[in-house]
Amino acid sequence: MAGKVSIFLISPTYEKLLSAAVIAQGAVAEGMEVFIFLSFAQVAFRRGEVERFSKLGKDYEEYRDAAMKYLSQRNVSWHSMLRDAKREGKVRVVACSLVADMLGLKKEDFDPGLVDDVAGVATFLSEAASSDVILYI
Amino acid sequence: MAGKVSIFLISPTYEKLLSAAVIAQGAVAEGMEVFIFLSFAQVAFRRGEVERFSKLGKDYEEYRDAAMKYLSQRNVSWHSMLRDAKREGKVRVVACSLVADMLGLKKEDFDPGLVDDVAGVATFLSEAASSDVILYI
Amino acid sequence: MAGKVSIFLISPTYEKLLSAAVIAQGAVAEGMEVFIFLSFAQVAFRRGEVERFSKLGKDYEEYRDAAMKYLSQRNVSWHSMLRDAKREGKVRVVACSLVADMLGLKKEDFDPGLVDDVAGVATFLSEAASSDVILYI
Image (cartoon, rainbow over all chains, first blue to last red; front, side, top):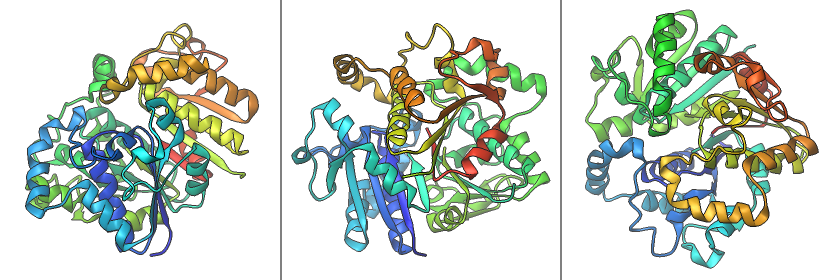
């Protein structure tokens, strides 16, 4: 299956990072390209923050133990899955420049193995308009 | 209006189940097919849980009374609407196998009147890629 | 870039209103049409409520100070951005009639500078099916 998946990733919470990573990995396995635009979720992609980010959404706290046990048994995480997807296929990750400005973040503040660039919402719209699957996560 | 609506239903909260059911019913009424992929939302589709599931998202608690009054006056609920949609049109509901593994759930744990199958994210991507409307709820 | 962006705006929280407004403004700047369907988010569009609505999602409370400082320094808000987008391009905003019924709201209860009409979910599906980018926010 060819085509492209575009994700607008706003949620700065573990279960949504995991969901985006699983979808990205699945898309790459199907031969699809992936574009991820990081809105507030970019806080989890800061250098030094990636490995320790563990904030779960308020509506998902009761699933923490089940999720963490599952992931640790398989020795995976949202960021290892995303790195794998980037290695195995075409996955581009861009941080939203408006949110970066808001939070005082610059390109060098992000993990260079995960974030490729910083750009405005026009970049997301352009990628999305040529995508087969668009998700606001 | 022909076409297909695909929903990635992650949120395990009443207002999102209701929103998905209203959209499914509206789509069927318009002659559209519906595909729903249950991520964490699958917890509400367990046998014996469907009727009593009442957890509202933290950002929606102030609307509980208005919503419940509206629904009980009309004698409807998210699951009655979804059952109606399945009866009146083509609505397929699939539980995500990764989340089912995580939570220790198997196909027989789900309400057979609501959930048709358990499958991986590739199934969602394939359905979504051929859909006219894709929603991550 | 021609085309249309359709947004199903359910979240009654500031960060999602802001996200929708930024996307609407970006879309208009790119020459795209915008359609916004207000589910529970319609509470923020009531006359007299627009200017004072300040409820942030539970998962975003730690970003309140950074966001408010950024917006006040630039003298913008979700509603000023949305008004600008409506002035500069084709942006139609419709409140969901089911949620309006649930909350006891009528067309005259909404800010007439922001909300164009009240209609059912079939209107959203029809707009979405002819859109290039569809987002459930």
